[in-house]
Length: 167
Image 1: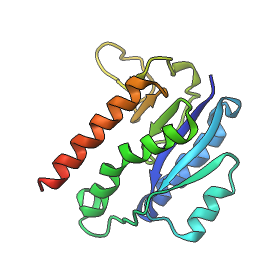
Image 2: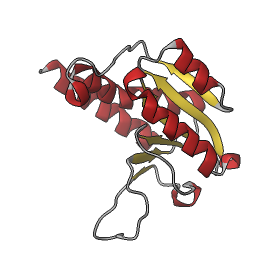
Image 3: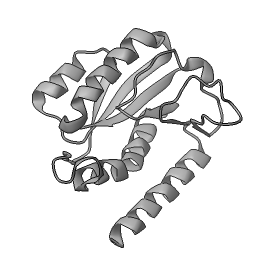
């Protein structure tokens, strides 16, 4: 099964993003990867050029220019990026109509992930009591382009929007 990789990235997280992208291209079986979709949430032109130097990369425009200088990791910039992920993932899923794996950009790949991607509508990363041997400690979620996935994302987006407006 071919799948896309999706992640959000801005200038503040770019050093992590470079490690993430390098591990992606060094470790994953690229014959199974369609697109590497990067939600641009505040990259410089040089950073965009670096990402576009890799095959399969597509920059998804978000109109969000956030950094983490205002409050650090839990500040306003960070929160705006985190709360935009579901919307941008939804855009990517609609645009490509392909199984999409959303991974946090501060992770790295240590093994190929194709074998753990299921054909279920939605798949979450879990490492705990039931699968203590799961070697994937990172944060990822997989969405297949199905009606249930789109409905779930729409509900998720609405919940984020309703919580954001109450702050």
